[in-house]
Figure 1 (cartoon, rainbow, N blue to C red):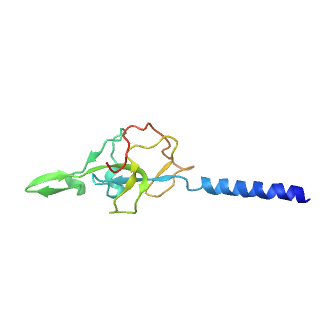
Figure 2 (figure 1 turned 60 degrees about the horizontal axis):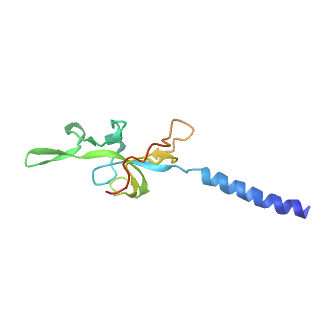
Figure 3 (figure 1 turned 180 degrees about the horizontal axis):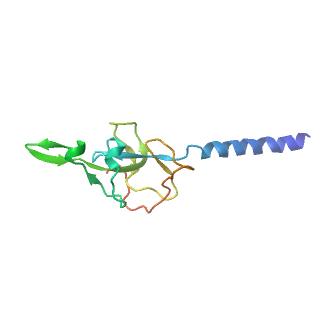
Length: 129
């Protein structure tokens, strides 16, 4: 009896650790402006599929006026990284999703239901550039 319980306990512990590690394993995918400041996700809703930034417009307060000239903000997704919620500046992530990683928009995990972004080529990398 002792021998079998000595084997089963570590196996159960390993299984529990593996299950816990797989939960919430997705990284955040957040909408940021040209300064890597987190903005409302609605600014990124019309992004082209190539990862290029999109300019804000008059209709969505996506810019500001300087001497009568409209200067748009540029929005794109930022994958992973560290930082907080709306208004915070992110670092340590990239503008392109990393292959083998799972991402969720605005902290909502989309694995299982809906979709998650789990790949892509390294294309344009380097966060905070």
